[in-house]
Length: 260
Length: 283
Image (cartoon, rainbow over all chains, first blue to last red; front, side, top):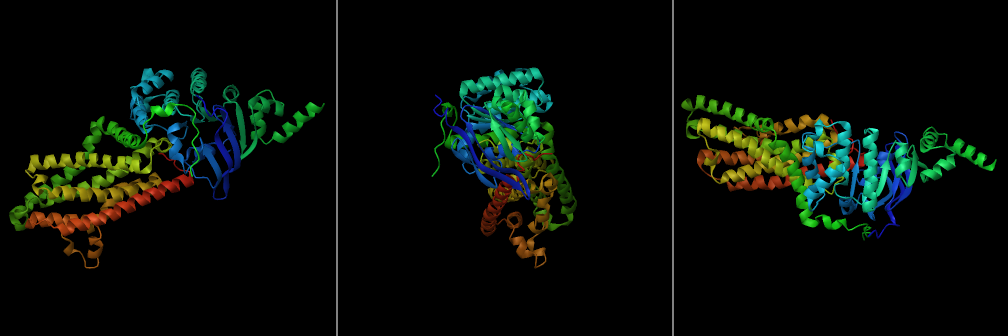
């Protein structure tokens, strides 16, 4: 079924975005293998959301090239947007519409056949049954995040871009959502690109990590490789090394320990 | 040549494609706003409120002036017809602009434009909602005009369709341009959506003929489709003559204004993609 399991679902080459003199993303290159989960890590303003926006076709790059499922973004976005979806803390859903109404609108936007069945399935999967007839605006932050996630998987995307998907969830619900995303990926072979500040989530879910700082890729590898390379105990410590500009010192220290 | 799109699964079979998918995306925009309108009686009443109150004021003015004014004796529906048709233009423009502003307030633009929705499909949804809003708003006022003053807008006969269509399309053109302005300038430009149409009122000749305008202003007036429509309405109400020349002039100008409005909106959308504002726009 997964014809492209070993191929690249996302290819980014020398991608840049500047706003006047400010370089938000500076010649970023990376590849995301089909069927895997990759994290974009970096502090606030590192360029994660800007990169995701360019991959979604919401933002026109200043230079470079990004392709998703073989389609050049943003020029060919309408070829692949039916097979993509996203969540982001920067967007919301109409607050006066109920959860069911919002999902019905997005089922039409994504042209779903058997929309009713699919909506019932995501309501069940994301545990929205208790508030599906309530206006979206009356929900708690955690409930809204679950609805956003339901919207993001409604069209069963082949590529899912997740910007801080579990940011406002309590540990219990956050864990359920991560489990759901893992199950969803196993079932569908979906490719996920995840921007997160939750390092436990990254270690648990991600096959690869791309570390960004000031719009530049400063390192990449699997979570295990990065932890070993920096000589740290977990991704949280690796993140702090990179975010605080201590990466070179940490790498040098790690190398020296290896020699000794 | 386009690169081949990577095939991952067989879920494409679960989606409509082509014209079916396009029709569903337009329906999604209609659904989103129909849910909003139909579940809120307050919203429906507020759509009818302004046109109805304005109509009542002009109707009473007619009642007051008609006994001493031969012109109003001959054409008692003159002011009421004018105010109702003016509101078609206003509602047409407002319907397009407010549909867009709703997405702004909801911070929903990002969700909409990372879906497969295209700008022409979104515009088709906006225009259809605008027709619905105009029919609700002006329809309510028309009903009250008949119940309170026995004036039926349908007494204009078939030309009413031409007047209605021309004013609505002109409203669409302005509404699309206003949507573009709001996208470029942010919600601080929201007032434009409410006020833009009124700058055209003096040159539209809603309540008076174009000939009363200063000579330098008349060419400007004749470049506005609404001026031709209201001239046509007056000819019909006063002389019983349907002026085809005004109809065609209004229709031709509307093609230009609608194209300009759509171009402004499309340019603003591309500019928003360049500036990265689609994801950040909201209240």
